[in-house]
Image (cartoon, rainbow, N blue to C red):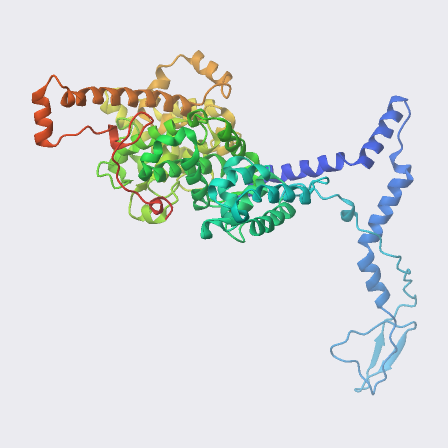
Length: 581
């Protein structure tokens, strides 16, 4: 169960939202303006004597006392019972207007204490409207309704577009025009097509589409809610990973910047898997595996999707759709996946970045702390989808998602706090590796002092997720405890350069973008070198080379057998289901 401290920021946001809503009310602004004029004139404001405030207070008290007044009114005096009619065991005795002695069946005198005063019950006044009913609506999960929207006009534009198609039926090739008639980005065409039943019949009739789109306009009032409504499963108000597959497949099929992938259809699923994982990595901040409208509104995914229509080079959209980033991720995975079964185990991951990660951290990665596929977790393996999260988090430890990723790994007992025991547990592994490199490690006590000075936790001796996000130097903290190569790099850096990096943090490209650009250049250079070596077999001046190539059946192979925008390849076959089990 989450601790109350975790909920405090959320409650504060709600209180702030209610306060801003109250402050924006016209009556509130008018009242504050009157008070401001009085203060400027030098007069004293007597809040206790204002009739309006007394009236509100009276109304509030009356509303709170309605129940008690009703109970008093129901307590009417009941007549005394005679000895021959004893009171029922299930009924409490009621009061009377006089003191009376009653002789019981055993001859004893029973004294009844009865109040001599009658209860004075006020006549209940008419119940006024509750104060809560006067608060205007401020929560719009499907977007704030627009007052001047003309649904019939939008529908007529759609009908006019359908009239241009044979039999008023649109195929997926025609849906780009329909999307524009709906005033949506062009790559909404597949969600629109599937939501109207086109994925089952191969076409969409004007009647089915108009009925679907009218209902969507009536229930969804902003782009986010419309997008989720179109892609989500029936009855769901969130997006899961497999909901995005048809939409992204259409992007691969129709975007000019991915035209070279048409000759490599078996690699479509790898690219789509990478994009889906990057979407959930950046958008699904709750780690639930379900993207809600609220999370989508807080992200810039729909803005990137709109830019996809204008930008022919997908590599310019580095946050989600970059093919170069996919190329780097998949090549890194292919290097580790020695048996090429699309899964890696602990021994495979130990080879990443020349064994930079500590063994204890690798064990935590395979413990199921940050992986989603339970079946693969039980088998002690890591899927390609989980590797995408790992690599991005490993190369950029400054983002909120990566900080949460590594915090989960280091929080051994799951109490939401990194204790000194947990820090020492990971640092012991670092010390052993430093000693094997003939480097004297810093004692844990000294290292701990440095890290506490770096993070400056709110509670002494306990480092929370909030502390790490606030300190802006989380990458140094994490590398100190489980990445030996980066730890040594930080130790050799000029302290002033680290300070300059903190000051410019967020202004330039991210650490992940820098890493992906550098690695892509290296991979392309290695690929060019391999191509030059393989060209010897095709050299017309070398008949011996041609003979060897013919006899042995040698052919040129692309680096890691993965397509790039520069070449065409023979590929292996993959299935989507491998990544969404």
